[in-house]
Amino acid sequence: MSDEKDEMIVTPFEVRGILDYDRLIEEFGTQRINKKLKERIYKIAGDRHFLLERDLFFSHRDLDWVLNEYEKKNPFIIYTGRGPSGHTHIGHLVPWMFTKWFQDRMKTRLYFQMTNDEKYFFNAHLSLEDVKRYTYENTLDLLALGFNPEDTYIIQDIEHIGLLYEIAVEVARKVTFSTVKATFGFDNSTNIGSIWHPAIQAVPAFLHSWIYGRNTPCIIPCAIDQDPFWRVTRDVAEKLGYYKPASIQCMFVPGLKEGGKMSASDPMSAVFTTDTPKAAKKKVMAAFTGGRTTVEEQRRLGANPDICSVFKYYNFLFMPDNKDLADIEHKCRSGEILCGECKQILAPMMMEFLEKHQAAREEVKDRVEDFSASRLRDDIRK
Ligand code: TYM
Image (cartoon, rainbow, N blue to C red; front, side, top):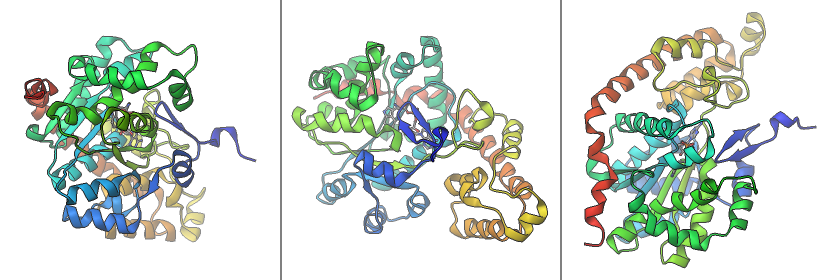
């Protein structure tokens, strides 16, 4: 009998339970990224990426179509985003790092949406000041990854609503309350800002086409929780004369505690980019692993990396080299390494990453405006 706490819930607002990604593909109606498609990406990109190699980016919509268009010299734009409800955790960086690689390899433009309005509507405890502050803080995290202002446009919903509004009203007229109720589980007690939000999150998928008056394919890299938004967006796209946006979707980097979730309300469950390296080390040392109850048992039977959060951090972020990953996995399964020792390997990696990332955050502080989508106003159908 399945336990209620194990029940899988994956929505843009909540992720919990034991995640079955095959079931998600089936329920959401997306496609698995197969070997052939990966090879096609690598051929066009001229490079491979470990997140694809390891099937951590595992699902898509219309990625093959976008590549067909690209090869026919109809290049795409990339669209992704963040709901600034708190500090960025390490998991958020995964789709952004992949986005950076994809953008660099495909030499294309990125629209990045900061849905500060969404987070205000959905979180009664956040003030407008809070979501604006987190917009800035999260922007530093994005820029610290090395994006280039020439090709990167950050849209802050509240500030740039004038840029978004015309497309948003076109979208909103085509989406019924019954659709968003069924898609997002809204009910009569949901505030009308939340009900309206799917129209706003659809806009950047069409923005480039609208600004330049040329229908342009769009691909959205993100974790699979955002898929309901793309279902609504894709439903209206052709009615408005735009291409349906494609997407490429990753799995979730789990939390550090048993049960998988990273939660802002439980600081020990996630490493935030603003944590001090010392605090992050403490979290790593307290992380949930797949270890046995005694040292003797672990030496004899080995541990289980499949359920271990430390191993997942190697897999998603810290060991891009397959040889390193295979080596640690072997040591874990064979009982050669104990969980405490394994954490002692991750902790300095995490600390070094945070030191570098935090230094990069400082460096980009005076360049935030260079990325602003307000630059687009001059381009609107010149
Ligand atoms: P948000 O802020 O919840 O998440 C930002 C991005 O991070 C992904 N994500 C994760 N990826 C890996 N492991 C995790 N544990 C994890 N948790 C979250 C999310 O899928 C997302 O890609 N409504 C959106 C903001 C948004 C957006 C977009 C996101 C607006 N337009 C376009 C993606 C693409 C939100 O609140 O994301």
